[in-house]
Image 1 (tube, protein in one colour):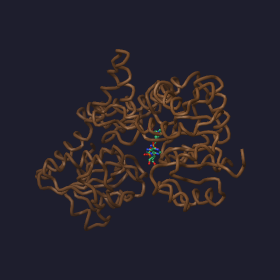
Image 2 (cartoon, helix red, strand yellow):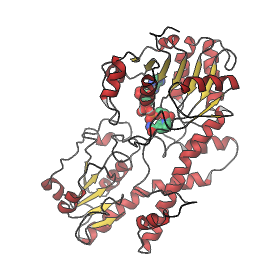
Image 3 (cartoon, helix red, strand yellow):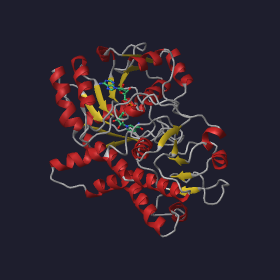
Image 4 (cartoon, protein in one colour):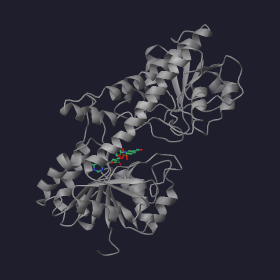
Length: 433
Ligand SMILES: NC(=O)c1ccc[n+]([C@@H]2O[C@H](COP(=O)([O-])OP(=O)(O)OC[C@H]3O[C@@H](n4cnc5c(N)ncnc54)[C@H](O)[C@@H]3O)[C@@H](O)[C@H]2O)c1
């Protein structure tokens, strides 16, 4: 393979694909990034970043060094040795897995597959996708046989956006191959950029392990969300309870309650398994129950807003309520599945005048799910603006927000993140939610 040519292609340059592409490039591998979004492709080729926690300079350095180029022309996969697929795997409107992006990618790359190439799926999905869904498409479009003529593998991503401990090159990475030779090739390719690879016996095991990791989070978050309500009724603060419990050096791991689940993973991935389990006539009660508890949290938050306003003799109807934090987690700009949207919708349904403030989301861009908010702008952070709301709901605890100013300015605060715990605030002003 010519050194000047890219050696691997990464399809889908989003929250997962871009950091992975940069990690390969930093490790000296030539990367061709492919995406259907020409804005992203143009940005990368101009050395710009479109993800808040990925610095532009990191992108620019790899583009300048000619180790990273991006394109929308998928026939260019013919230039590479390995193709890694990082496209979205959402739920459809009936909350069933939508693997159409994976299948579409399979269709466009198949005609350019050559013998000896490796295809790896990284998108989170149900066990069997690589083998039962992607493989037939690749074989039909290429006329080649997986495991014989080309290699096929699954390797899930473990990205934790904005977590400094989540360094793509250092987080141990699972790899499962269709055959032992597929696995060996995948380990060799990833080994150029990732320190610690963990081979497993099949694509299915790797797919299932990724779902276990995310279901584990969903179930444990649901547990503390439920305990928040139970202990709250007993006058016990769940946050203090968790701090106490986590002093146990073994057998316990802290999870924290919140206003509901958000992001592209935890609210979605568990339902990939519940759907697949039905094919095997297996029920998934734990997973469904966790989903139910977690999706009811925005209702709880809005009830607490009602309680807080009521204590000031104000109805929700006609009150001005500010939702602080639109992104689904602290210090990111990602609003996918953010419970803040649900909270805003519920408040609006009850007649409140709703606004939001998020330093990472200056304006709400058009989305399919929340079109009614499209174009809405984050309100400015100043005393007059914040004091003009009847209540402020802390839905996401961004670290750049000055919570002391919030305590001084806002008349009433409903805190779903325990962000006010260490802040000096007048008694009765903060309502935990
Ligand atoms: N975001 C995370 O923290 C995270 C963590 C682990 C796993 N995952 C999984 O990784 C996968 C990708 O997630 P993401 O967060 O990077 O999504 P994303 O939406 O940020 O990025 C996906 C990219 O794929 C592109 N794309 C869509 N269809 C395409 C197609 N047919 N061909 C080429 N490109 C296409 C989009 O334009 C976008 O740039 C999902 O399966 C997700 O569940 C995400």
